[in-house]
Image (tube, rainbow, N blue to C red):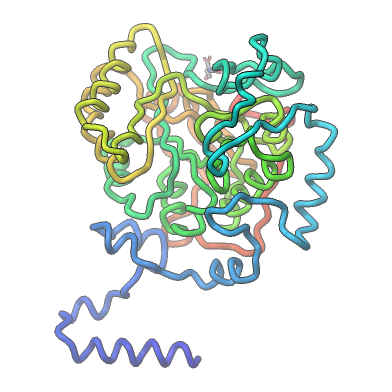
Length: 388
Ligand SMILES: *[C@@H]1O[C@H](CO)[C@@H](O)[C@H](O)[C@H]1NC(C)=O
């Protein structure tokens, strides 16, 4: 009550100021994903808004620190028990050396055998695990003339221009969300589900996974899924390793958590726009991929970052002209149950015939953070109509 009266007095101060009357009736910050979706301009979208139920979870240390490598939290008995129960599924493969805070490899890459015993993508581009019971990575669409549309590193706070564009064009995409970003941009994360996109994990802190211990890999995947479940309401069955860095040890841990590894066949390298690359260079990368439309159906790597989102919008007319279908990964592999929850996505056939709506999605007005929600981890070989 005390807080509320403070808030009222702040509003009273604004009443006396030059604000127009209709601005007064509107709240300063969005109170749900639908209101968030109406915002224009990055300062409004990126302004801090609090969700009390989420703030409390963060305050109660239900998640690792944002931006820091995750490990199993003290007193997290659920996570510890699950981690213990999957030990026998993790092959005995060494942790790779790293430099500069797990964003670069150390020197041991030089000793890695050419025979590629661990299907270590960063060394060999391998997609087909050498160890049993791990499903192969998904990196292309099986049908012809298809572009698999994927965005890494979201949710980005000022996402509405991209998401509005996807809505206007009746497009859906596969979103690979960083756990810490879901905590920081919860309405943005919710909007992705409300709009019918695929929600997949992209780890908690975006490090090279093969350089982390088994427990860290587990925690990076586990807490990202936990954040997505409590904030968005679904348990992801797909993930993408940062920088593509995956081997059979990391895949096995993801598999035990019910997450399929989704890679890419073509890379726009659009992230370089944020490092000073010219738009001309990135447009050239896109056009190289457009030229392959007759003999490839690639899953393509693009990013949900400030400059990359507008670059995608700029490239889309030519993409659409080159590729017959631009689809999310769920559609191209018929993953009609991309989550264990009761939500049904369209098959490829339905999607391309224009039946693009998913059944059972929450609305932007009603979707809520739920501190009591718990993710349901179904090992990949017990899933039906999922990503493989
Ligand atoms: C998806 O399902 C359709 C039937 O609806 C089938 O023809 C097609 O081969 C399936 N594609 C994949 C990748 O399983």
